[in-house]
Length: 140
Image: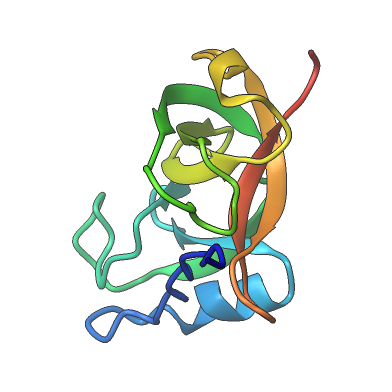
């Protein structure tokens, strides 16, 4: 009996909010987030208007992708798993730019990931030619 791996779905662009700049950044291995120039603040997840002003005056800007683990959990799925990489550490990261984003931790045993650890941007390959933002623990 052969072991079958579960394929991870490739994310799709949002049809309700303009997210092309985000996905173009992903292709170029850059993390880009919406920025409100009126308030000089980032926002994430993408929205059609600024959460600070209600205006459509938004830009997309490249961010460093460094931050701190705000919350973490371990995903365990019985069976062959996703690409054979379970258990998986899933974190909410508070980016240095002031927004929170979800991602996987790639370089640490999930049981060692903890709130308050510093992380940096990494890229998780989820398809033959598709990557998605993830994180590596730094400074341990």
